[in-house]
Structures are given as C-alpha cells and as structure tokens.
Length: 361
Image (tube, rainbow, N blue to C red):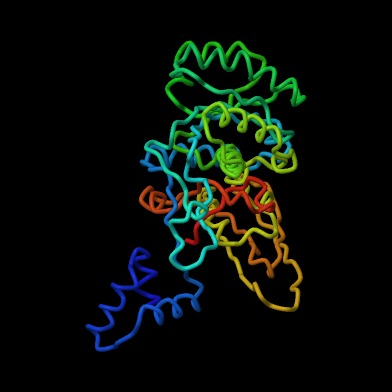
C-alpha cells in the first residue's frame, strides 16, 4: 500500500501515510515508512522546477526533435550556444552544510550571513561551443534589442574566431523578445552564420544552463564579498572551465538522438524523459547496480521512422539504457505536459558532460 500510494501521488508525506494506515487498522512509524520506501528504491527529493509547457510548446519541441533526429554529433559541435543569467552575491549556491557540535548552530563559523535580495546581483551574457568557452560579459544596463545586437556584434563573432568555428557554424539563442525583434532578425540574416530555430519554453534543451550551474558553484566556493569581486571571480572561473567539460555540449542533440550521445554511465531513468521528448515509443532499460559480476554490454539495431538505422550499446551494471525502440506514434499533448523535463545537472559529476539530469519518472 505504501509504495502504491507514493507511486500514484509522489507528494504524499510520511505523516499522510501514517494516518492512512492507522485508519486501516495498522500502526507504523515514519521511520518504518522511510525504510520501506528506501528498500523499493524511493527516496525523498526536492521536486525539480521545469518549464510550463502549453500544447503549442509541446508541438514545437516535437517538431524540433524530429527535424534534428538524425543530426550527427559533428553538427552539434559546430554550434555556439548562448544565454543570459543572473548571479547573486550571496546566492543559493553558497555552502549549506557544516560540521558542528550540539548547541553550536549560532557560532559564526557555522552560519551563513544573509541579506535581502541576495545582496545584489549581476547579469551576464555568455556563449560557448564544444571547443571551449567563448566570451563572457557583464550586462550593466537593462537590455533591449539594440543593446543585444551590440553585445552580439562585439562578442559573438570574436568568440567564433577564437574558437576556430568551421565554415557554416550555427548560432543558438532563445526566443526572448529582445532576441526576436525585427531589427535583430534582419541583423542576424546578414551575418555569415546560421541561426538555429529554437522551440520556446525550452531552457532544458540548452546545455549552457549546465555551464551556468557550474559557474555559479565555482563562484560560490570563492565567496565574493562585494559586487566588484563577484564580477571579477565570474570572469576568472569562466575561463577556468575546461574544454573537456564542454566537449559534448549537445543537450539538444541528446533530445533528438539520445542513444548515440548517452554516456554509458548515465542511469536509465535519466534517459527516459528525453527519450519521450524525442517521440520514441519505448525505451527498455535494466538496472543491475551493485552486482559483483560485470555483465556484457548489449547492442541493438532498430530502424528510425525515416528509414535510417542506428544502434546503441550500454552497460547493464551502470543501470544505463540497454535497447532502443523507435515509434512513429505521437504522444497526446496531455501526455507530454505530464512528462518531467530537464533543467541541468549536478556539476560535481565529471561524467555529466553537460547532458541534463532528471528526476526518476
């Protein structure tokens, strides 16, 4: 009953379960409930914040996935990804846990000073590709279309030259109103690069979100005490992000042809939401984490809706994807709206390689 109830409603609390069982004539403690759920592989986690998707957004994302389903990895390596982000001086990425003795919670070493509104913040614009980070600048004024074009003019093309982007490289930005003004579109049309058509409400598909996360964690570890130091540390840490962390930047590519770009160590439940996002009918997975013997990798080959064939392999011991089945059925909009999509990854894991992580579905 406990597992079934939690599976139907993940927001059920242990107190709710205790009360339900008492009404059914069974007396249990919260600790017993926790142990029972833990044995079933369930643990209490913070719910991830994900984009609110309307049917029009769902259809745009599905169209994007299908159009890029068979794009080779080399194509994604020729993309410059960009975005803006806000970093607070005393943000939520600061240290949260300390080792302390009983009744020492208010000792200065064991506390985190807080101020209203994060003590100030700075807005940044940055870009990167699989070859490394591009330029990062501080946006000191409220951005409008004219300022955005100036930022691109001063920083995008120099970044492309520094990164030695190949001819025909592609620029990605989202559909922020400042990015899509008539003047900006006309400015971009005259430039010697292509612009990636991007579905709205899709920050989870942009791998730069994971770069921002890594930057914010790095900055928090330096503990800047004023805005000037915050800006300086941001620039220093941005330049320190290794190119190896950016080598596989294609979260978008992962959403369209996830099998070919999923690291073998990625857990299967992390792949499922993007598999659904890619309009795949079924992904079969197995998890054998903890087994002593090492199972051999399995390999399968299936045909895509457009007639191409692709295979994928994975390691059962890692709990990663084992087989892929392509489906041409399009999920209903209400099904899509219930899928938990992705917003970033734990930057402490060197294995993430900027592929977004996901809660278990």
